[in-house]
Length: 179
Image 1 (cartoon, one colour):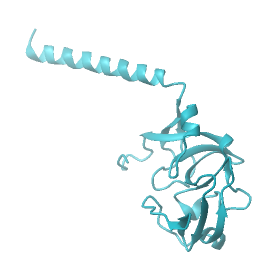
Image 2 (cartoon, one colour; image 1 turned 180 degrees about the vertical axis):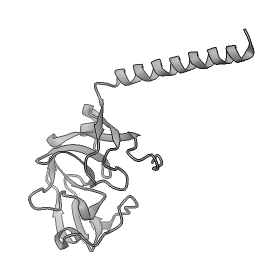
Image 3 (cartoon, one colour; image 1 turned 120 degrees about the vertical axis):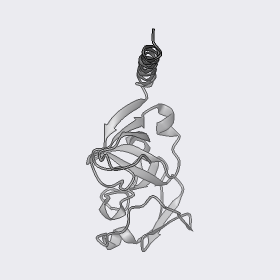
């Protein structure tokens, strides 16, 4: 056998092994990790419409929630993605687009640039304390996100959490780089 043929055979074997390994990994995680396609623009610039993501739907992912986690949740609008900004017992407020949790301004480098189209009630809101069993969530694209700032939306219940965003496996735009 020539060295090219041996190298080709080794490469084919390696690709088959990798494919089998990934298949086994994903089938083993099938109970917890589920694919979703991003539909809206509320989580720009991180997540774009058409992006395909994996969401951890395990019990641990739905109960071990932290400030800053991106979650998938059920709402009256269907399945949506939002970032947790306040947990039960925490106080959240906003003054001219600056968000404060327990009186301390949050560092939010992930935000989409302001468009100037935001409603005044969404740009600045009075302090509110999150109740037990609830989460205060907001989209990263604040001017275009229906979220906990709105009276009709309000804080979300823990029971509405479907899972936690883990990673993007397919970017809708081929020009975007992996985050």
